[in-house]
Length: 240
Image (cartoon, rainbow, N blue to C red; front, side, top):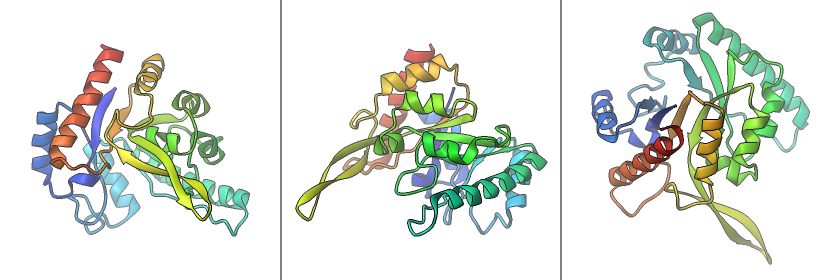
C-alpha cells in the first residue's frame, strides 16, 4: 500500500519542494490537487482530454473527479441516473488514455456520500474505468463503518483517503444537531486499528491519501510530519 499526501494544503510548495518534503516525510508520493494556485491548475489543464493524456504520459493512473451535489428539490433517482451518465462518459474518456477516474465519498449532501450511496452511482459501470475512493473521515460523518463500506464497494475500491473526524453536538433552536471537526489522526473517532486491519485483510495495494485538512495551533508542517508518522507506523504494524 502506498502512502501519499494530498497536496491541497501545500499550495505554497513548488513541485521540487514537494519532492523534497516527500523524502523528508518518508511517503511514497502525492495526491496532487488540480486547483488554482497549485502547480497543476486550471490554467495549465485546458481540457479533460488534455489532463487524462498528460496523466497517461506521466504514468499517473488515477484522477479524482469533483462532486455532484444532491438537489433536495429534484428526484434523487433522476439525479442518480444523470450522475451515472456523467461517470460513464468520464470512464469512456479515461479508457481512451488507459487511466481511471475515481469518485470520492464526501459528506455535505454530495451524491455518493457513503459507500452505500456511492454504489447507486457505480454498480454496473466498468470498474477498470471508474473506481471508488473511500474516505475514512466522511464515512464517520455519514454513519458508515469503514469495514462495512469496503464490503459494499469491494469490486470498485481503488483508493482510500485517511482523515479523522470528531463529531459533537451542535445547538439549533431548542434541540441539537450533528457537528464535526476535521482533526489530526488519532484525535477523532476513526478506528484506525480496524481500518488498517481491514486494508491488510483486503491485501490493499492502492494509494492511501493522507489529507491533512485539519486546523492546528502548531506549525502546520510540524503537524503534517506527525500525521505522516502516525500512518507510517500503522502501515508498518499492519503490513510489516
